[in-house]
Length: 379
Ligand SMILES: Cc1cc2nc3c(=O)[nH]c(=O)nc-3n(C[C@H](O)[C@H](O)[C@H](O)COP(=O)(O)OP(=O)(O)OC[C@H]3O[C@@H](n4cnc5c(N)ncnc54)[C@H](O)[C@@H]3O)c2cc1C
Image 1: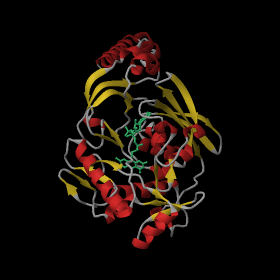
Image 2: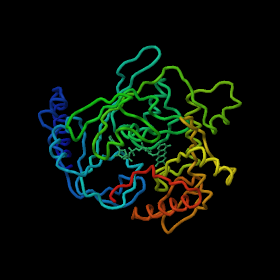
Image 3: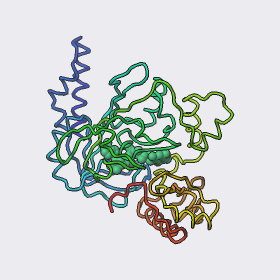
């Protein structure tokens, strides 16, 4: 980290000198001559406390910040030497339950670029470390539509295809054309097509390949220049029912409003969003449950050979009596039972213990095994 700071200072000094002498500065060549790509180096014992929205204490034994794509090649051998690797975005979907005894790779890749456009659509290439919500705002301002339902999801663009983020009836995969990844094992850059990504509910090929294999560097989105609003999700459908016309901006505003009311802001109350995935069960299981619990919140999913049902995990957790309860310094959010919150605990294990307690209760009551959506790191 120090090397990069020195290099940045050196470049600033050169720019200042040039502005005094009136000479022009080619920053690109300055950076090249500095061989900045080689200057960043792996540092040890880096605190991750401020790099996770659960606000728990953890240390990375080894840490590498990547500011330029080229650094992936120049550090490939060093990276490969670590059998345990983990790629860190904004840390909004993680729970550290111990120190990380491997290499944390922290990409800081920025940039948004129009690759192609015509009257109807645009292909936008966005670097992995751009902030997701800011991208949604940018697109809306430019008149590039589709992402408005995904407003206010914390985190980076690079994590969006890994998790196939989704909200308010939309999943990001609908807008992803292809994903550029650096394969840290083969030490090669690839473009994964939409089909290669094998997107599923909060899942993708990149995620299934395991931690620290593919580092997303850029994501290409195909966005429409005419809005094609998705208002299927109940809170949006009901709200806009009486509107004659609805704009993408109105959908964005409503999504932000509802999310702000329902979800705790991690800056004010530490959390990582929905802790569990909504489970999916078969027809027979569903029939048994709906007989016992007529208010069960479930959404049919068309599938062969039988219809399956996505069950609202928040409803199950609320029914099991956890909503709004505190357990020491951690608890279940009072507005949204799917969100576990950390009031003031440094130790992620207490959140994990609460999650395990919930999993056990839900299993006993409904014969459903909840799975965490949040990635548990350092076990
Ligand atoms: C208040 C709150 C609300 C939320 N609401 C939603 C929601 O509505 N819908 C939803 O889907 N999610 C939601 N989330 C979860 C979270 O915002 C998303 O999963 C987000 O995409 C995580 O981004 P991140 O950059 O913080 O990733 P991190 O938490 O840092 O990492 C998540 C995973 O992605 C991997 N990863 C990160 N960057 C890269 C990269 N460049 N290359 C390869 N792998 C990478 C990590 O290794 C890890 O496995 C919410 C979280 C919070 C705190």
